[in-house]
Length: 162
Image (cartoon, rainbow, N blue to C red; front, side):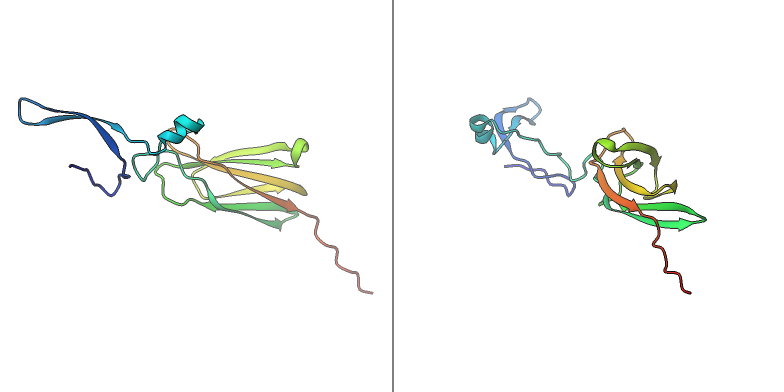
């Protein structure tokens, strides 16, 4: 019985195919990864997604807690988007995509790439917006998108006092 234990490795099972003793007293072990779901894969046509061998995946994690705060300054509307990630990824950047409208009537307003976890959009007209943010690692691989919608409405008119 033998094993390898490191905090950064995920536990995986292997089935030994052969063990051979080398002339120098070491052993050569040939093994295949044990797949407990194999019966379901064969019998039901299930799709098996292999898991990463470490706790730290190469694909960047999805953005979390995406929020947008709308404010007005000098007659223009500003939208400040903020988000975070569940873990630190070295060299991560974020791809932002802002669209206006919804459904078939939506149109792309702007895109941006930033290394910060916030971004300010200025000069936005009244309307409904959808913001999509994705993490991108140094290899160009993208995480799952996070999306939020927000609306910029005309300010309420104050009643006129006589």
